[in-house]
Image (tube, rainbow, N blue to C red; front, top):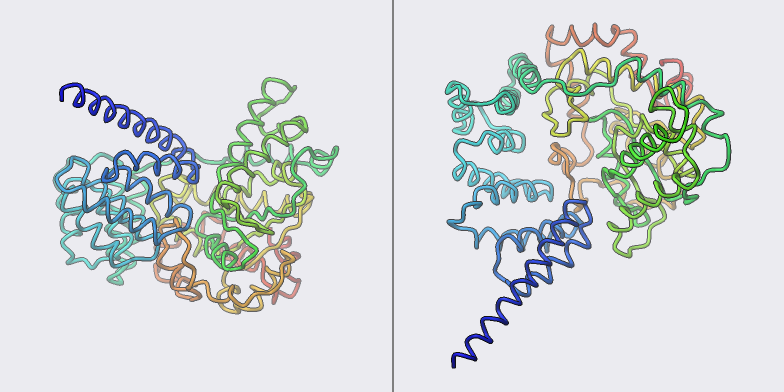
Amino acid sequence: MGADRNGADAMQSKRQRAGFRHFEQGNRHFGRGQYAEARTHFEKALRHDPDNPSLLFYLGACHCSLDDNETGLALIRRSLARSRGLADEGNRWWNASSFLFFAGEFEEARRTMLKAIELLPDKITPMYNYCNMAKPRLDDPVVARIRALIEGGTLTSRGLSYAYYGLAKAYEREGDHQTAWDYALKGGAAYGVQCNLDDENVERIIRANTARALTRRPCGGDPSEAPVFIAGMPRSGTTFTETILSLHPEVLAAGELSGARTAEILAMSWASQNAPIANAFEHVRHIPPELEEVAAGYLMSQVDNMAQGRAYARFTDKLPENVFRLGLISRMFPNARVIVIHRHPLDNCVSCLFQRFNDIQYSYTNSIDTLAVQYKAYQRVLAHWREVLPLRMLEINYQQLVGDFEPQVRRIIEFLELPWDPAVLDPGKSTRTVKTATAGQIRDGVNTKSVDRWKRYGDRIAPLIEALGGMDQIEAWAAQGRTDSPAGPIAAASDAA
């Protein structure tokens, strides 16, 4: 009997070690965004420990990240049922709410976030997340709890930023737009500006990416016609545009890929060590074909990981900041297409000011002055690309897209050289995971509720108008991408810039 027990214990220990190894490997893949590989390891780990709440949650998260929300949410719900009393139960409910929200299960997401707040009564971030998804009224108990935390004086500057942004959402819901504006600016000030693209760096990008530099020799990148880069400012309509395209059977919507950002870092590093460059932005003049091939291969590996064997004629990468690295992208994918989304500058900037971005890359949105600098940098660089970029580029006006929907969608489909499919006309029916703070608006489908939002804020908007250069300049930018502009969509944009 003793020998049998020892043998059984040894077998159990061996199974546990094997399960833990798969869990560790799954975590590594998950952290890199390699969700298909992570899913395989989590599935193997779960065979050794089928009721482990962490494994259930991670496996569910993989399925959701691969747009299998039905399977993913079922696993996440099983994880919650097995998490009662555990030390990380509150965090699990908090994270579960985000996956529910991104999958379009808004009421369940709201209830789940309330449970997380109950379990984490002193943690401000879930309260902000609740305000972002539920848009509560001022008499909501969560709003009262946020006020109490502010008055308690224990929040860090980071915590205060979440609290103020949360109150901005509540005042916006009540129609007190000017107070909402004040709280949004307080939230940005508490968070601070940690990165910004100044005029000098914009000038360096322009000087480095000349027509000659971009066409100096045959590209070493991938000649595929599949890549479609959707670019613009954050909160300009890039997610909405990608959601439209995701409904086409020949399009793989890949979301915001890190591949081009990683390629830029790699290229800058190589050039700084191997080429006589004055600044890092000159990398595009010097990187060898082999590096262009490696960079393109890395991004394509991200896409293939998401595709899981599914055939596609086009894939989308909607990372907004790619607008500043289109020169490098033209070397990585010489046959790629670019779609630039233009939203009215004031609507675009107001939406940025009200959003608490987690990515440090977007911390310039935390003040009017730095946001205006970034917006003008975007316009300068875009005007340059119109002159020198050796890629096909289509410019779409967001207001015209939502106001004259089918003709504009047909423009996009024709630009991508895809057969027409009427499914693209109903973006509200998309079942894909939409990882954006405004997932609720995306699920609403086509609407014009956010058009002319800037007019709600009265004289509070004046400093933003001044920082952008005045209304004449703003209205010229607002005409970009419109097909009903007297000069046409591209020419009008060039004149405006």
